Length: 202
Picture 1: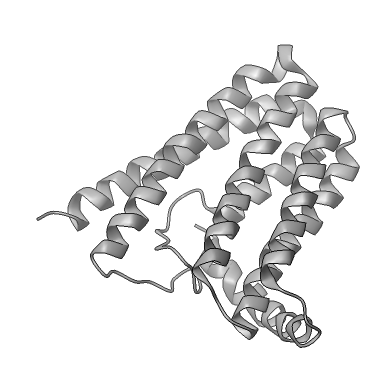
Picture 2: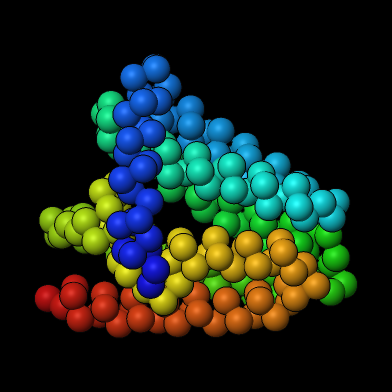
């Protein structure tokens, strides 16, 4: 829901930074992997209750997630890089709820499982829609230049990061944040299923 608006704000400075980094020889894939490493370190910090460190590490990882595409735009976009970016994003999105479950299993495990279930369903609708859209030659730049077809929804990347920030700032509220966001994610999946049902009608 917020991704289109956020792209208008963050794309210009990211693209400028991407050109500078590309000129210095940095590769987009290396930045993507660095972002994954920061994300996994953020999850590890949550597991031991270091939420301030986790927030800083997550911020570094998300910065890398923005810069890799900017560097790729300045050098050369590749399907392999787009694939790596999507996989790393999904890995991080799954790691943080899991980390909260490990940190306090008695309190957080069920809510984390529900949130991961919603991510699983939403991811399935997202990837299936993108695969069929590619086969039909459909394209969109509404969320910036992407390797896959990105459909808009109530819960997108910006909302996910915002909720993760709130979880790290207020870890005692994880359960209610997880249940609330899981509902948003499932509504997004349902809306995408409805769009697919009408878009892909033969």
